[in-house]
Length: 336
Image (cartoon, rainbow, N blue to C red):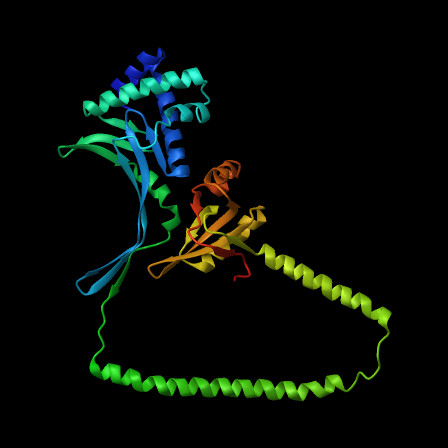
């Protein structure tokens, strides 16, 4: 919603009831949110440009601890337009207006926004944020729920605090003496296991090989060969279906992100049961691993967005589009 005086102005300029004008504006706010989630950038004439800035994971020392902060996406605003005005296209594509109606709506909004910013009026953009004067500064304040949506991929990541630990000289010497002993013990254990396996296999072989001097006819053998070939082919097919290669620059739809691979595998099963060909996309940043549940492989963000629109809402609630920064193999239940 917007403040009542602006709502009344919008209704007067568009020659409609105040309630109808408020409903129209709220619909436009929802269209702006959807556009930002899909494309990470939006320009609106009279306001400026909104864009999503990525802040990488950080590591800093604080007293006796080291703090690892996960990456985060921030919604930013610039008062200057960077790539034209999307108001007209949003009104046509997302509000189902005709070209004439959309053009008039875009001109009216630009006039209202420009005047409101110039006079530092409060503007509430439902789901997006607000422009307000606080502590002597007039600026844009993003909606908390929108920033949570922008950080779906990091929702399972938490700040990690590690205490500093310096070894004393005696600890270092003790550690150095333990390593060779441990190495010898592990090596001895491996040799024992290898010897046991080797001796067991050599004892078992004669009982199987001595008993088959008779050569079987050619014809009965063929079905068994065909059966083995079919099984191998089915296994290969399952292996291919259980992984997917994303080439650098490809786009995919990310459905959820988890810190635990086990949790990601648990969530993978119902997606595949629902007919979603989902995979696990493992990623890491500054030593921290996380596991994305993803689906699809697209050459463009637009193609991925089109696919996302047609997917069930209960499955894609909170989904977003991610571009592969390098070639990667995503996998299913069988792992890599």
